Image (cartoon, rainbow over all chains, first blue to last red; front, side, top):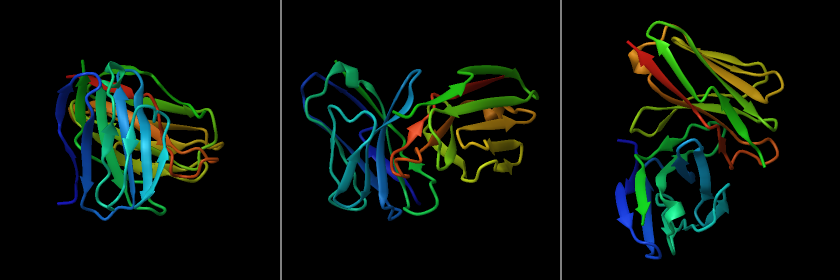
Length: 113
Length: 113
């Protein structure tokens, strides 16, 4: 089954404790992206990747890092999480080209206390 | 930076009534995409529009892309309870290329049975 998976689905952590949210897709998609969703603000793009070893900032990259060492994986790293990073995070992927159809993962709800 | 606004933010309709959400961008868009997110779920791609003035239909849903490629609308005829959710538009700015994506703030549709 074609899908995007994220782990963990729920995470409660404390300020400053480094964490990684994993994202994996099995559709051989070149493009992958991370978004955060907050009430009243919609989805905001954090980082995106056009292909392996190619990443770029979205609209809200501060406090986040990403890497794209393999085509299928695109982890989101919070080196020193803060309470304002409490949010619902979505990973998405799509094939490069004329179709812009993105496939989203199930989401990761992160709480930083 | 590019801003994408949607109105209304919330819409409550009786089952069977029509529903419309509007999307306005501060910059010209190379294309626009629409997504639906059910309560507790992840965004699901509905459609993309590319051409100026384009109109596409999916059963009871009608999507339009403005002549100036700065606005779009989604119209649902005779709403059903399965239409409940939040509808988002999203578009890359024509100056950025297609990699960076800005989502609208979304319109949450609730149906009164």
